[in-house]
Structures are given as structure tokens and as C-alpha cells.
Image (cartoon, rainbow, N blue to C red; front, side, top):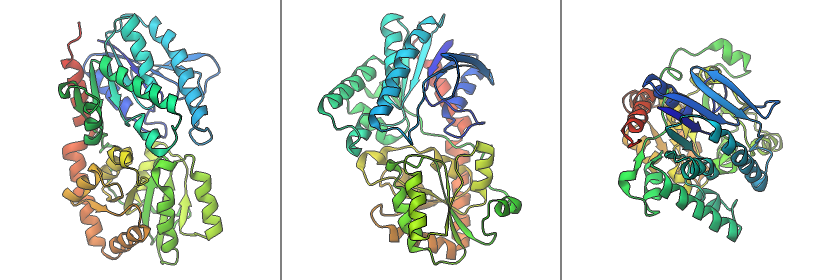
Length: 399
């Protein structure tokens, strides 16, 4: 089949960011399909740029987006600009058999709908977050008319999709609760990348080059640093532990909260916190490997407990003990498999206590890391889940 894959935030392993769509595309290509990726995740000088990346025909549109500097309405304008520019480009693609559209944002469903209505092309819709419920519960979307429009768009997309893929049990329930037949919905979670993240000897040269303490017990947070991620919660724990010897917090990534976090470090004199910015996967893997515990945190908002965070599955693969603060399926996952702990999202002292406990009990920390790696290898590796996705595509009733 010829597949048009629409994902605004497409990343390759050579970039910082989620690579789920890249690996799924690779699996689809192995199955004999042709994949064209329509995205905007690159600065270009022309209206569009078309390149081949590892067998994927990638079309970059000249639409700029920065979650760190844009407010909600600026981001919305960027989303709509992508919609307006992507539809005519999609229409020009020849012999398309299937469209795959992956959120967020929810507006990514509009070009898929256009292909369905005007070109009679079926589409598979992937739900990575339950929009618009996430921005509604977080207060980012509070305009009555915009909420009504967003909820209507969600309903129309779900009804018109040939099939829907969700990334967590909570998302699955959220979709079928919109009166969508369960047989039309599948759950394929985010994936571990066992060949990209793995436990090995620590790179002492890297530790020294980064200005870190070679003897320290390190706690890492890697990924988006936005309001939803509960970053101040981690900072509260770091402040509680700021006098603890040989303990470091390492932050990798970027986002709207980054500058606020750095300013707090200056004001509160938190010398136990280091910010290293965005890193491509190879370098990110090396830095995560020199750490002991990985943090997966979110604000204490019910809808965020449905998340399927990339960093959780990369942490499993990296053989790290994991601390989560969402009382959803991630809590069940780490507890049932003895690869981490859940801590109260309103009690940073609990996070601080768990970090100290693992620091004082290295054997438990190592054992949890081994359990995490085993779970990555047997259940969540990309070779397993991408295969499930590709098999699902092959099973769709496409004429």
C-alpha cells in the first residue's frame, strides 16, 4: 500500500524528541508498504521540502512551532496553519491507499478528514493524548465556544476513522466512552527501544566533561518541561535534598517551564540540579546511563494519568529504577513489575524520601533496574509493538 502518514512532530533518531512514528514507518516499509510522512518539524526556507530519510519520503511544511515560547492561541494558529497547508499537499499525493494521522494536536485529524471526504481515502487515527480533554482539564482551553468546537471535532474524527489506536488503557476507555465501538479501537502503548537505551558501564569521561560528580547518585528527568509535567514538584524534592551529599538531579529536554526552573535554582541556590538541554538519542542514551533513577512526573490532574510517556519506556529499556507520581496505569505498571515506586503527586517529601531510600539501598535500585529491562525486552520493545501496529494496518478492510 501507499500510506500517507501525517504527524506534525515527526522526529528521527538523529533528532531530540519522540521517534515512535519513525519506527512504525520503518516497520511498515519492511512489510512492503510505501510511506510518505507529512510534517512540519524542521526549519526550511521554501514552502515545503521533500527528502528521503531511511526509506521514508518526508515532506516538511514551512510552519513554525515552539511550545516553550507560544501561548495557547499562538499554538492554535500554528496548528491551523499546518492544516491549511497540509490539505492541498495531501490532495496532490497519488495512489494513496491509507492515511495515518497521529495526534496531538486534535487538528491533525482535519487533513485526514479532508482525504476521507473528498478523496475517499480511509484513515487510521492515533490518539497520543485525549484532546480536547487534556487542555480543558488543565485550563488552557476555557473558551465555551472553542470547547464545543473541539468536542465536536473529536467526535467527527472518531466516527469517520476506519480504526483508532490509543496509547494507554485510560485513552482506550476515553475513546470508547465517546460511543465508539470497542472493536474499532486498539491499544498499542509507547515503546521501549532496547537497542538505543541499555545498561552498560558508566562513561566516566562523560561524567567529568558534564561537570558532574563521579561518585554521585543521580536522578534524571528527560523529556518535555511543560506545565503538565509537574516540574516544580521535582524542584521541591531537590530543595528538600539540597544538603544531601553526593546526590544530583539531571534535567534533559526543554519546554515552557525551563527558564522558570533555572531561575528557581538561582534563587534557592540549588547546586544539586544540572540542566543539559535537548540531546539526540545517542547522546541522551549515554547520559541516562550514568544516572540511577528516572523520574516520570505529571501534575495531579486526572486526565494526565492516562498518559503513555516516552520517557517511561526508554527508562525501562535503560535499566533504571523508576519513580512515577500518576495514580493511573503507570503506577500499576511499575508496582506490578517491581521496577519502581509510586509517590504522592502532592507530597514532594515522599519523592525525596524514595530517592534517599534507593540511594541507601543500591541493591534494590539495581534489582528494579533489571526488572525494568526485562519488561522492556519481553513486552514493550519497539520490535514487538511496531509489529503489532503493522499487523493491524494489514488487517484493515481497505479496498
